[in-house]
Image (cartoon, one colour):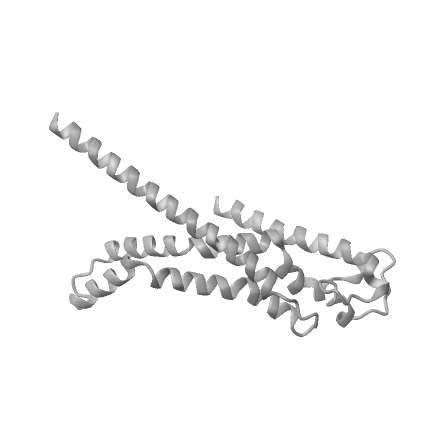
Length: 192
């Protein structure tokens, strides 16, 4: 009887501990969504230049992901416990499987915010539209003026789109946002 009670207490302890983790991860994801929205409104402005659109769009997606991942690892108490333990034992007695599992736990928890940032960025598609706009093939659009070059095409995500190209702007943005969302959906399909 005592063993049964002990097992039930262990189960409830793990259940409530895992709920705390779920609540924490949910709050981190919510904070990340809010941060991404704020970044999109305040800081993200496509440069509308064929030389800079691609790098700027990729940086708007990738740099925050990297920063959020590193911050997640640094702020995790288990990271510092692992470092202190391995340093104390001079790496001799740190078992590789246990260290690997602990690092997997640290990385998994640190990945919540970056994955959320990536998903929201790809769903919104603004950074992707900025990055990919200059690579559009004008021949895929009916009646597209052939005298327009990369410099004009790179201005599709911006307000100063040339007047004769305004009729194509909505279609271009729709196609690129679709591509962005398709990439996200494909990534989730691969991860399944």
